[in-house]
Amino acid sequence: MERVCFQLQVRPDRLDEYKARHAAVWPDMLRALAETGWHNYSLFLRDDGLLIGYVETPSIEQALAGMAATEVNARWQAEMADFFVDLGDARPDTGFLRLEEVFHLEDQLERLVD
Image 1 (cartoon, rainbow, N blue to C red):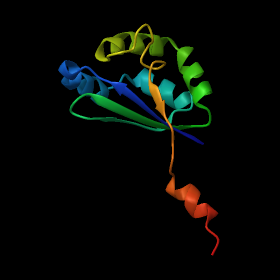
Image 2 (image 1 turned 30 degrees about the vertical axis):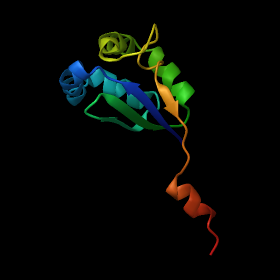
Image 3 (image 1 turned 180 degrees about the vertical axis):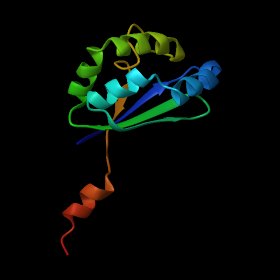
């Protein structure tokens, strides 16, 4: 499994609405995410709008392509686009900044030889 962490910036004046939308994500969106390889997917939001996402997937490229092929994702991304700053012409699902993983406990534990 590939572990992917990404960053976006939510508009500070839209934080409450962003949280409310994610407290009740559309059932067809939830199913599409699961069916296209998004596992252990979480979003974390700081009070200044910094959003950190984490997902485990066999392939982030395939997971993104799978979602891009769904009608529900097009609707969701269109509704979510105005919540973010600095996306330019990109949609939120393609405009995020991917963070480099520099440490994973289980990987290092596996390398230990007793």
